[in-house]
Length: 185
Image 1: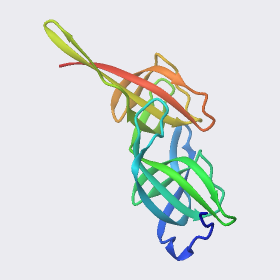
Image 2 (image 1 turned 45 degrees about the horizontal axis):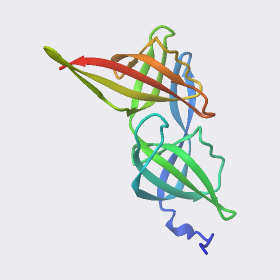
Image 3 (image 1 turned 180 degrees about the vertical axis):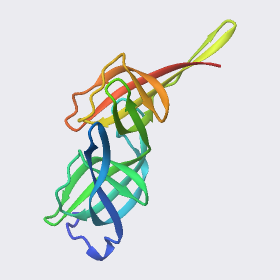
Image 4 (image 1 turned 90 degrees about the horizontal axis):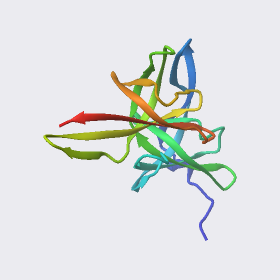
């Protein structure tokens, strides 16, 4: 039977707890809510943080019980951690599963809204058409609920315009938008 005891001396790494907030009108960002101590372990398995994209390197953090929800994020060693699960460990601690993700700076030029989003790859298609070939680049843009995009609109991701092809908005904490471009080879 696993023990619920956590050696608090092993909570030896500083982790930033982040919250998503509007910094100025139409400019959203992750901001630090507080610092906390955690025991951090990299996982040997991928963390599936996007239902429609591929997984990322996983990390598990043990920390004192605190106000933390799936809509928050964590920053560890300068890396953005997308929270995928929060499990109680006894009465004083929690275990947080997260994915180490890359954050892109995005802009909805029509609405004039800037925001950060996590980007993951989706299956990349390839067509060999005579006399040239094309690659279909498909990514999934994962945003907090506050960001609303619609299929057909363009969103700029790290300076490159991508059309939104599908919107998945049923998750309670995040939205996932499939974006796609066709590139000639």
